[in-house]
Image 1 (cartoon, rainbow, N blue to C red):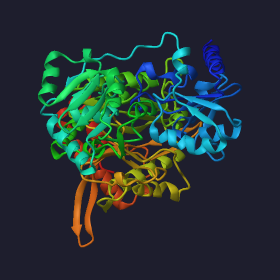
Image 2 (cartoon, rainbow, N blue to C red):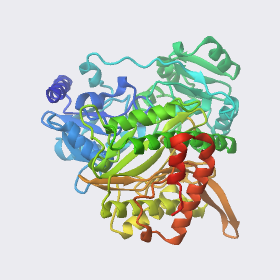
Image 3 (cartoon, rainbow, N blue to C red):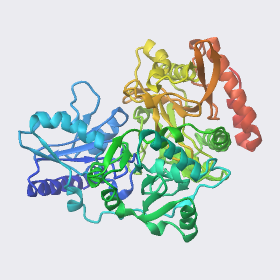
Length: 597
């Protein structure tokens, strides 16, 4: 029945395409803020296809429907799309064209491709046009075919907005605004336009709950030399907050007034905007004002956490680690005595975190993946499809929490029964890669993608590769994924990706064997100053995450003495920090799992 449901939705889209003389329609995983996690109102790609991964592009023509997604989701897409008539396209795989190239190959001259300009970034439009214009294929961005087809579409979210308060808010709203204004002035801009939700939340020291897992809210902002204009559903703000914002020169205006405000900017003024983070539709509204392209200043400002923020993150990591001790103690005691599924893991680990003071929510949907499911890096168990944790193998758990003093993201793999020799070898190689990056020293300002081979070297030496990046930036009680840094050699390096003190980044190499198992070990690390030499300032990583790394899967002889020393030192610190926070079974588990090897 579900399969026919998605087929009927695709057919309705085709009818709308035909009515508008459109030969293809592209449905992106995006909203007017180009967010990674979407409010239900903007989850059109999932509504049409049934594919629930966070990244994917649906392309529909009269006789073809395909969904492109990256290697994290290949197996999940195959399963989710089975029977829908939608084909999985493995983005990045050899011989697989990307959507613009596919269109260039299959559409005739004069064809029209509809992409909702509300969901298409300016940068992406230029990339599509570079491929399609030479083929005389037009991109139409002023048609919203989704709205015509999607009956019963969810309303926009309306969760209250609140202030991120001291002591956790370590920078004042005015300090943030002034830091952005200084960079605007340096670039000769009278206005700065922001649509990215985490940048707005950081700038204004506000938080919300419009998007699952991310404490952000739907809004746009125009920063001027003397005023900040916040475009938001005004019912989300109480009177006191509106007054507090006004005292800092922040004026509250209706969410849907942003287009008119952009259109009314003086033609002599210049507006700074990031073409990767604003949409085509809103850019069209700012037709007359002069435009200056560049990264959002807040991007790097919020990426470099202050010493005070890092201190709060350390406290959040300790709380998180205590919750994980409670969870893993339960898990090991329950094996063989209770029926445990991947869904049980999610329930128990979230409940353990919820008992910690200040816990707000998970920072993303928990990944609990047993054996073959672990080969899908972003696997998500459902009531209809999940594994029971029994027998022999490896259980991968990737989870995190939101606390007022920080955002956590951790992956651990634990044995169930008796793992195989090959599973242990994979585990040890991944651990070696993670330790290698943890120990790295590097010159200040190195571009983050260039660090990736450090973590991959032990795996490459064994003829093993993995498809995702090794590291992503992490917010401060904000999005679990943020830039500008990205430790991935597949990411084109940009000057904005220069590593700097205070950047919090994940460290998560992996191995994925389709149909068998997956291994990923992840800690969060923060850039700190290392030695200053005649060759310049060097940086290193301080590991923030506090949770034992299971030693039962380690092949001891594959580890070098320095790697053993790193692991034992890490476990000694984990034990010392977490012992005062746990008791009973959790304390016993912590002591056992932090024994030196």
